[in-house]
Each structure stands twice: as structure tokens, then as C-alpha cells.
Image 1 (spheres, rainbow, N blue to C red):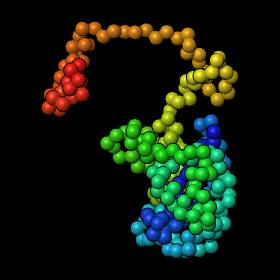
Image 2 (cartoon, one colour):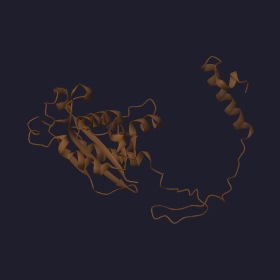
Image 3 (cartoon, rainbow, N blue to C red):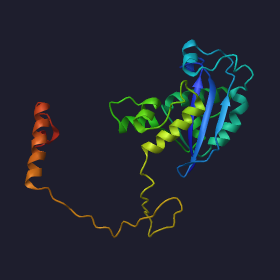
Image 4 (tube, rainbow, N blue to C red):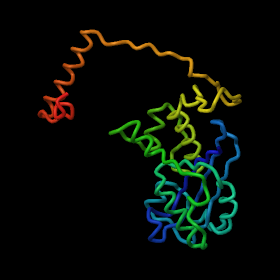
Amino acid sequence: MRQIFLDTETTGLYAEQGDRIIEIGCVELLNRKLTGRNLHFYLNPGRDSHEEALKVHGISNEFLRDKPPFAAIADELLAYVAGAEIIIHNAPFDLGFLNQELALLGRPPFREVVHSVTDTLVMAKEMFPGKRNSLDALCDRLGVDNSGRTLHGALLDAELLADVYIHMTRGQEALLMDTGAGPTDRSDGVQVDLRSLVLPVLPANDQELEAHADVLRQIDKASGGKTVWQAAGV
């Protein structure tokens, strides 16, 4: 399935209060490889950006004066994303703006056109709980070069997000498991038949069991005797 990494820049933070999209960047991934078939628009929002938004994206109101409105590019955008998995960092924000733009044209919500939407911010919070999970923070943590990102830009951010996503999901392509009756030919990875694989069971020795029990005792003590296993009498 095609994967499209999407990002927007806007005049402000609140679509429901009249803020509009000024830039859309899309990057296509197929079989975990960038295709180069990207999509990028600057848009005339019909209003000025807020000062705080200008500090983030640096796209001047004057620059956008001669750009097309969202209505002029809607068909091309929807045709491009149709049936694909859309991957966005903090998806509710971008979807809120896309849905607002589509509603103004009498079009159905964005999700009705695409196959699915994946939020990498949700993924990152599950992978790195308690840590900063902005796009910049993820680039730093995963070794993705974001030195060219002095300001936010939709296409650049979509490209960085694609790189971050590949790093976050690294290893998924290393082992492909077939759930059918037998092995199948795959050109995008290595097929391994796991049905004949016997995994050895290595029981813990006495020292390891005691070390484990000690860790459980420490956790139980720290919780004031409220651990689940203690309550269950385990």
C-alpha cells in the first residue's frame, strides 16, 4: 500500500475560528522506499497569518497573494491521497484544517477518501513514554539530520517525518511471516517459514529466580503493598 507523509502550515492554530491552510507537503513511500513522487502547494488563505504563526513558518502574507486557493488544488490533492495510508505527526491538527477546508467546498471529510490515518505522535508516545516527542526531538533521538530545519515547512517536515517513521519502524521488513497455507514469493523482503522452528525453553536458575523475587519485593515496597501480584496472592 502507498504511504503518504503529510504536513500542513497554517495561518494560526484554530481551524474552527477561521484559520486556513497556507502550505501542504506530501511525500510518497512505496515498499518502504521514497518514490520521489511528492506533492507540494503554497496556498492563498484569503487572510493574513497571525504573528506567532509567522514566527513558526516564516511564509509572508505577500508571498501568498498570487498563490491558488485550496479550492483550486482540492481535486489534485484528493486524487493523490486516495486509497493511501496517510501518516501525520499530531494528526488531529492537520485533519482538523483539511476537514474545514473540504467542508467549505461541500466535500466529505478527509478520512473518507484515504485508506487510513496513522499518527506518529501517538506512536512516539508509546515508544518513548515521558519524553519529548516533537518532530525535532525525534530527529535528534533517532539520528535524523534536521539541520536544514530553521523554520517549519510542510514539504521539508513531511520528508523528515518519512525518515523518522522508517527509523521508528526499523526491523519490520526484516522478517515477513506468511499466514497462508505455505510459503509465497515476495519481492520486497525475505520470506521465512516459521512452522518448523522449535524455540528452546531456558528455565531460570535459582539465582535468577531470587533476583527476580527481590525486584518484585522492592516494587511492592515502593507501592505501599498495592502491587497487583500482591493483591492476587501471587
